[in-house]
Image (cartoon, rainbow, N blue to C red):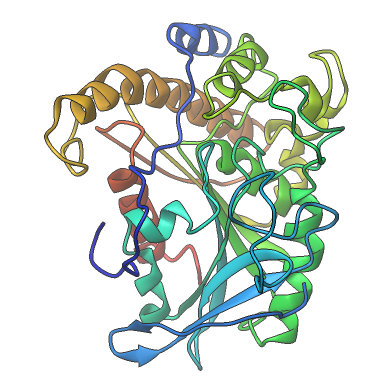
Length: 346
């Protein structure tokens, strides 16, 4: 855990990853809320932290796991952890990746981006939603016996926004920023494009921004089979591969909705870089970074480049960042600060 993250037990090695292998090459070839509870913490010794529970839009009102009974005395709603400071000029919502957990966001566990609060930007981190793509699903995932339907788009665009508005997070010009990593990256772009009344900037970090590209539906299907402790059925999300909902939720197909917004995309090139040893030097860590993180990042690299090309064709300017690196937290932290330093939040 990096400096600035709140300490707690039950850490994970926060990594959002797909099992895709050579499907990355196919993509490359295919394109030339109500408050119910709160707590406090400190950043730079200033009390800035609050935890909220927002209406779950029909999903379970607990965060200890997808279908465990709610603990006695636990507040209802989806948990959201926030860092806010008087006088800040922007609020950013940070979306997690494929392996999001129910206790803390990977952003808090693995990065220092909560310190944005001391640099003018309030930070909001919704908790939970593994393999959800932050979407409203068609139905429950039957592969893992999920007894409810994901409604994350409802939570983000309705419940969360209402709670943030009620608690003074709509600052500056009155609109929010949203950023996501990996499976949350394309979701962040699409959510912003379809909700311009609330968002004026969006960022995808190592994201999958062209979901209807050749091979991508299969890649996503395979990735959801790798989620512990049981696989998710991708057909429960947007329906079968020919369903129009795939296109509706594809960031490339929502480019016109991003016209006039600030857009930031970033990716590594799949080559082991400076952060490859951040999670330790064990053989397992090195294996995951080289043999899983590298192909995943190569896929996101081709997806990010493709999105940038489509944006240029449509005359939509995009801020971009490319570096040596794999599909891991150190590089995503760097991208957030790069975006900040280049004026993305202004």
